[in-house]
Length: 298
Image 1 (cartoon, helix red, strand yellow):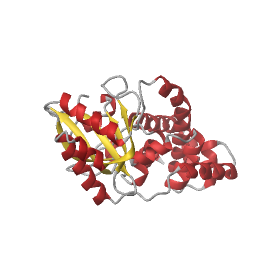
Image 2 (tube, rainbow, N blue to C red):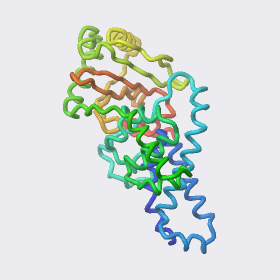
Image 3 (cartoon, one colour):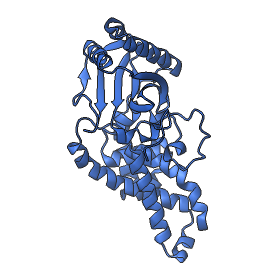
Image 4 (cartoon, rainbow, N blue to C red):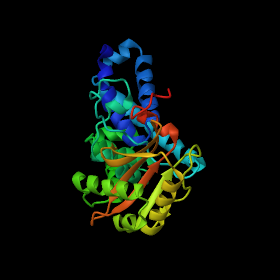
């Protein structure tokens, strides 16, 4: 089969990111799957009818192990843990670089709202749901990853499905307009305008990872969030707010002196007001955003 398997990398990165919510962990899982492939004797590789299916199964199993150990690591994490935010590809040719972020297909299964729901699932539920419902792998193949019967995998996917919110996402045009108004009110430190844009029961969750200042607990309620945002604006002179796609939907990026310090993703309620804000400030999760105005730190 030779190096034809290299062409599978993009699909594997897409699967692993949705399973793990972390670009670095997804890349490591895929690298490990390839290492196992190349460690096979050539005669064994020749016997494998579908290298892509083999690599998907192995990547899925590696991700399942990572998800199992991630729970303990995230309990030790400082503050809330949020998935890695993905930039859009404005100005970058699609899929031409070796950067895993450039390999990712930005669809509704990578929105921050969707990934946060995936985090509530058990590892087995998440693997069954992502492989079957998102990537359309048959339950017979999912069973090979989870080492369970196809019927058991079907039950896991059904259980996961119940956790996924059924409400249709806000149209991108509506979200872009709302995010623009949030940006303008935030820059003006206009608390009343922010309160009007926020759902009364809105929740803002921040991820600083102990490496950047961030609220350790979610900020709940539109008025509380509005005052918190206005307070940050007061303390952050020289911060430039930019409208940028985050995980494929309209979001905001805060930059100072060319360095991205904060990425914010939004989810809207049915009436078009902001229901959820996810704020990622952990610099380790923002490395992929370095091209948005600064040389890469790596």
